Length: 144
Ligand code: SF4
Ligand code: SF4
Image 1 (cartoon, helix red, strand yellow):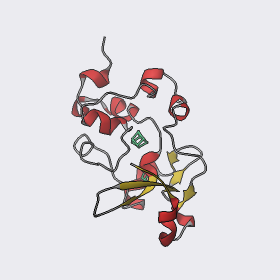
Image 2 (tube, rainbow, N blue to C red):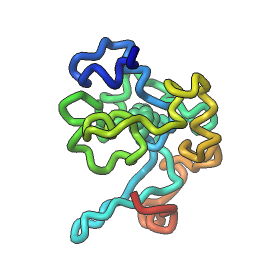
Image 3 (spheres, rainbow, N blue to C red):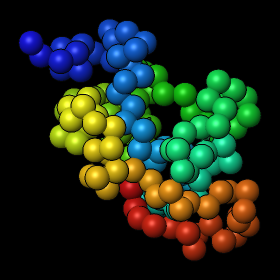
Image 4 (cartoon, helix red, strand yellow):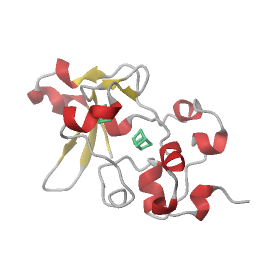
């Protein structure tokens, strides 16, 4: 039998199925920079004020949208259009007709496969609270 992510659209999934798509990489909680002219998106090693880099979790997931106005709630509708999301993200991939990466925990059955694949953020991120805005460019690590 095929797994649910191959048979259901994002809108057809249960809440539990939807939540299980998140591999916990933490990359959507990194500070990113946009080049307005080229459309390029740059990833930094700076984490959101609420991000716990050691646990790769939001410290206040329930209230994140009110505490961090820039935090975006992913939905089946916007998953396709959020081009700044990492291209490894299961929501973005499925919304764009792709499959899950072979290291995804739903496939491996092992949550640590995300780290082993090099897809997770570093536990040594700095917090946006600890850096001046004008220094953010110096923290760019890669293009997304
Ligand atoms: S980028 Fe996608 S898979 Fe990674 S933590 Fe964010 S929502 Fe989950
Ligand atoms: S508020 Fe939480 S979920 Fe939103 S970007 Fe920050 S750490 Fe991530």
